[in-house]
Each structure stands twice: as structure tokens, then as C-alpha cells.
Image (cartoon, rainbow, N blue to C red; front, side, top):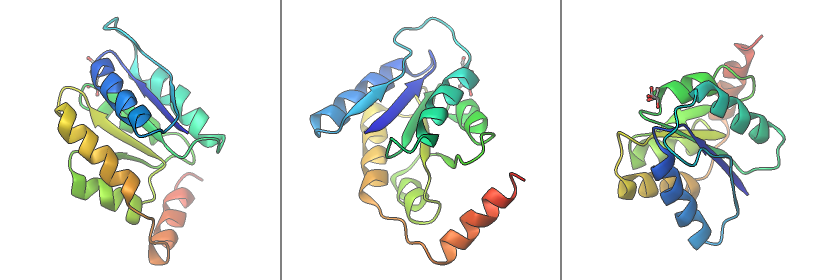
Length: 144
Ligand code: RB5
């Protein structure tokens, strides 16, 4: 199960990604929003990241206009490693090296096809562990 949320800057991209995941037979919890009414992206980040932290979801997807604000907010939350993605290469590395538990994208930055390819590249990759786990441990040390 994957959890997804967006602000008003990316609700259309969210619908595209939800449909793509469902077509692949993947269950998705869609936390909204569902229209262009203005909301504050830190609230969306908090809601989705709290769900990711329960351990009940494989990972979370956060979307806003650029992906920047919502990824900054997510990375303030202990235990969250949110990767702002603009390419398939970065998506692959975000899993292989950073074991990101949340990915962020921008609905006003990426076209739907690229966003789908980025999501698929992230899901197809495997965390490599080893020295990358040591580095992740050091990231979480910074939370203290
Ligand atoms: C909302 O207008 C916009 O600021 C937000 O979606 C995002 O791009 C912020 O980083």
C-alpha cells in the first residue's frame, strides 16, 4: 500500500499517479486534495508522513507545485527521508542509495509521462544497504 497527498498545485498530477498505481494493481491511500482550493503544503506533508511512519505503507508520495515546499516540510519530520525527484536517474538513486521513504514531485514542473516514469523507476530499484545504510544512520543522527 502506498500513501499519496498533494496540495492544490498538483492535484491533477496526483490523480494521474493514483490511476497509474491502481492500473498496476497497487493499493493507494489518497489523502487529497481533490480540487484547486488553496491549502498549506506543510499540512499535507504532516498527514502523509505520519502515515508513512506507522510502517503500514511501502512509501509516501508528496506533490505540490514544484515539490520543493512539501519536500522541505517532510524532511523536518523525524524518520522521514523525502527525495525531491525530477529525473528517472535520481529516482533510482533515491531508492538505491538513500532508501527514501517519501518521494516528492512538482505538478507544475513535470509532465504526467515523466512523473509516471520517475515513480516507476523508484519502485523498480532496490536499496543497496552497506555504506549507504551507514550514511542514512548519520542522517538520522542529525535529528538529535
Ligand atoms: C502553492 O502555490 C505553491 O507554492 C506550492 O504548491 C509549492 O510549489 C511550494 O513549494
